[in-house]
Length: 356
Image (cartoon, rainbow, N blue to C red):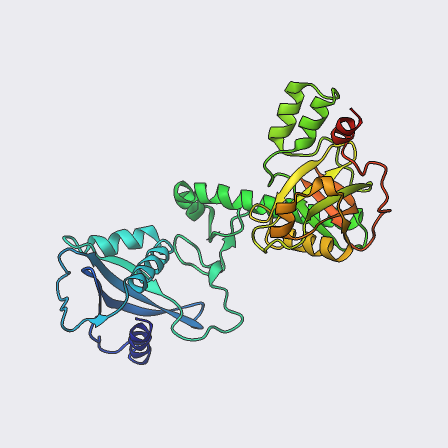
């Protein structure tokens, strides 16, 4: 389909303003097909670019539009035809609504839709098509200050489009706010860990924070508060961008990328979680496993079952510095390590059990 569409566009670029050529007919298995006819080719951006307006008729297992000949249609794949349909539907939303209504209203009795393809030739570097007014297509429009995406030439056009733009504007605004928060968090992380390389762990992307359960069993936390903390999946300690503390990372060293499970906890504990590669950002667990392989030490035997060692390799542990930048954001520093002889090497509850 791509070669047929490219030829179609090229013919109309050469014949721009000249006599009409034949419509482009496409067919696909399953009774799918479409008929594309050129309405006009017009310049935009002060003549620096051009778009081709189309009348499109797509059908699926029904009656083909008038003028469609299966014998003259060019074969294509169903997915390619669906992709073309989605592209033209998306471009249709960028045309002025009044123009769309008037144009499609003149095709009564058909399912034709108006849309366009753009550009027909390479765009100069100074052409900024996104500054065209979304409603009337006038140039030098200003972007919506809330979402920064849609552009309008006047307040009248903006008010006219608001009912359809409102939901998308809210979604884009929230997305911008998240990006700003992430950027601010990245900046704070740089201050908290200095110039040290680090790996960021998402504490919301864990099954539960076992530290809450551990503290409840030890009598340091009420059951109600433990349930709230466990469901919240965040650390029990307060975030402090400038405060480092020690965490213990442990896991089997021969796990496969994409299916890694590691254990992470601090001393109190306020953090005690399982990190799964399928829930963390891509590469986080893989980087932590590599750190464990290169700089970790053998874990005590009571932590590792023989069957697990045979399947996943030796189990190792590593003590590392960490900074809790936010309740759900833990930065593990990778170039500086604390002493690997920690007084809390044995889990508190396990230690109590061994003493009984």
